[in-house]
Length: 330
Image (cartoon, rainbow, N blue to C red; front, side):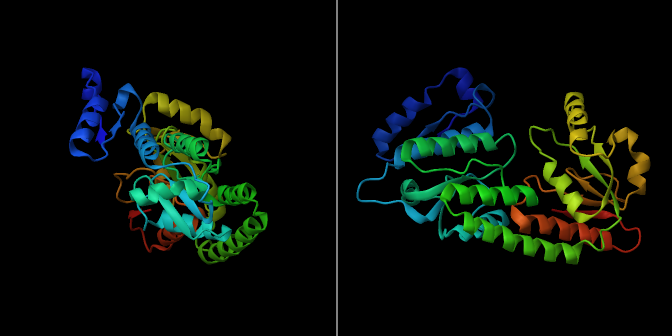
């Protein structure tokens, strides 16, 4: 697979012709992917074009001899590899609906597995950033158009509300509403058990939430729900001026009051509050080593277990003795 660079795009290299000539010479599939960076998109566009090229080359519509596999789901996108915490949790949620076989496309699928994807009962887009999710959804939509594989068009199951809605939507799509109800009930029980264990030490703790990522890369809604469930008091949302442009700061200042009643401050306005809080949740490492910091993962974690993983880290900070600072990575 040949991935174009921006230089090749500026010069005007015909990489498709190069790939075709090389394929004829070597008698191996050689694909050219249009990913010229600023000329035609970003990383996520290149990821989409790579997946689309693989689908066009190796997938075929179901023949009369083949039937759709009710126990197979195609997971589209990348979340840290097959053994990652997120992929394991996503597969666990899917098993409520009878799925036992999974095709991880495109990054971890062999050619043989790619050919099986048209047999899948459903395809489920995996989310990275708000910027990348539309490209994964576009891939799912085109797989449905080309191969008839239905896909789940819904927000990602991050934090509790979206996890419930995601389970309900998957149940509706598959005609398995009872399975969705069972999943929501069991996940509710699991969440309540974890909250009972973890939140007593968090009650009445004062925290600050520091944001240094633009709305294009970061949706803070799941963090606000996490804060509400934990029982901590949000003293302020602090915008990290060193990591945001003035335009990005203005966008967040306009948007955040619809999601929280806490004051939204710039870094240079927050010294007093930062010195008074018990700990900080932040999208970036802060240079003040006296602060207790929870460094949020760049990609929000999936499902109830992703939520309780962050709660466990918050509880560790809350239980820390004395005035010790330091950082815990989510």
